[in-house]
Amino acid sequence: MLLQPSHVVLGLGVLLASLSASPQAECGEEPRFQGRSLTLWLNDLAYGRYPDMEKHSAAVKAVRGMGVDAIPILMNRITTTSESPTQLLRSELKRDAQMLQDTQTVSAFEALGPASHSEIPTLIGLLAPQYDAAGESPTEPECWLKYRSSDLAGRVLEVMGAAAVNPLLKALEEKDPRIRFGAVGVLENTYRRSQDDRIVPAILKRLRDEDTQVRWVSARALGSIGVLSETCVPALAECVRNDPEGNVRSYALMALKKFGPRAKVALPAVMAATTDENSDIRSYARDAVKAIQADAPGTR
Image 1 (tube, one colour):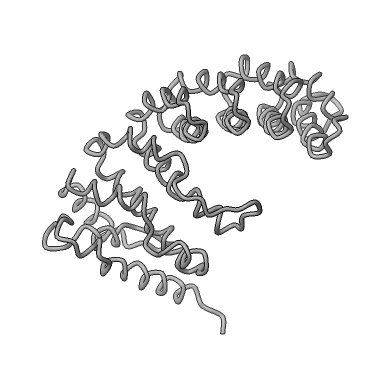
Image 2 (cartoon, helix red, strand yellow):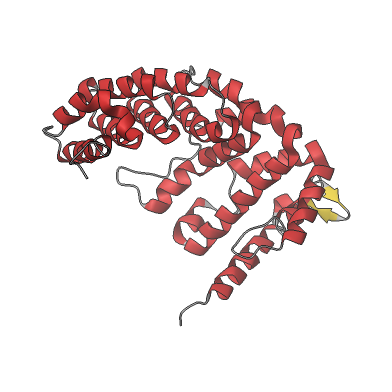
């Protein structure tokens, strides 16, 4: 029997409701507002295609009413899961319920606003993956579980907006490349909220990072943000020409494609990449050439 959408939503709702009966939800330390525990209020935060916005508004008010008392529970929700890793890896429905809970955690931090900003340093530390479930050939659920807490910490930092920018810029200098990697990704998304003109130059410097992962995520971020082409395009072209890692060259080419006609100065480097020994790089290069030449006569 095929499940109808209403059955799926109901199933997720039952799983989410079961979280309120967990030891965490029942502990005496959990704050309450108008007689209801924090966990129960969090379950009322909007999710799904047809959210109850009246309940959502009441839940936002409740979270704000609990203020800093809510923070320990919320931080714990970032680093722990509602089910054991084994259960989450086996059950897609339980993973979906966990994802909904995580979204509600982000909404709760957003509702708290400045009251939660004291947690920014801790959240930055959580950008490094906390759980290693992945082997040499990880499954999609294993990858999700491995990066769940670090991705969730990043999402929370994003909703903190401008308040997180300075600490994130400093995090680009951290010794742990995983934190540098995470900081670039968060800054990429934070730029859309803050429009802070320090972000792009800081990410640009990471194109020369010693860590391959940091370099490719920086190239991706520059293409996604898509500003300061006069400085970003030459730097990305340099990556295409000289970076020893194919992954970095590929992301640099994808970024140049996004800059389109503004990347004309990179055309010699991109054209050269169309003959690269790596077939993926050749393909990305051809796509970038088309985008860069889009406004040129006879190229459409």
